[in-house]
Length: 315
Image (cartoon, rainbow, N blue to C red):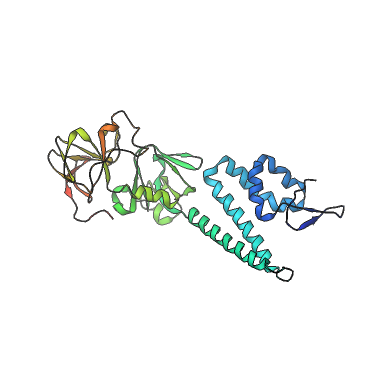
């Protein structure tokens, strides 16, 4: 029978002898050290070890196969086990020697702090996306073309700017969960609503995409810098991505007539974003620009034509 030295309560064997099981509040570390395949004997050793390790070994196996999705849940499981042990120690005051309760209280506070940190890390936001625009991989989504995250299944052109987030082509986006749309209101918006999906993302991803609001890209040789303005020397484009203009969809570009200035919040910058700077050999000639306020456009055929900028800044 597999035995482990530790400080947990002794467990009786069938022969009446006692042996010590690895401390329950340290079980996660043991399972991670052994890895899932080597930890199986822990589950098979006896009922005590089965109770202590079964769920952890199962989660560890999933985390090894898909760490982005299951590793956070494994951490939560370990933190909860630590908290349960601390509560058990604190409640056993009748046999606790002097100083043990103070130690248990300190462990309890540490466990609560760890759980709070994990709660923040696992907090998610719910967004809608149009399924055909994405490739589904284990634990992540990859955009097949420029597309949107939206707060509803409405057509992207009907969604307010602050309720949608642009995602360029080729972005691999970690996700925690994806599911079909079940809300009857969302499903009845239009005939393609059923092709949308619900996705749960971490706030860090959303903040990264929100930081790109007001960000556009220009082909440097077509523009002249005048203070914090850029003025097109020829008819050209504002682009949401550094892709060649012929590769972009109409909604990803704005046509800017020659000599019509565009107001910027700061000087044009080199393109440093990892997902942009390797798109093609001419990216180094592009510049990243941040507009002071949203562009005003008129529609001609399928393209938006720049005519000025709104008075209010990006929110």
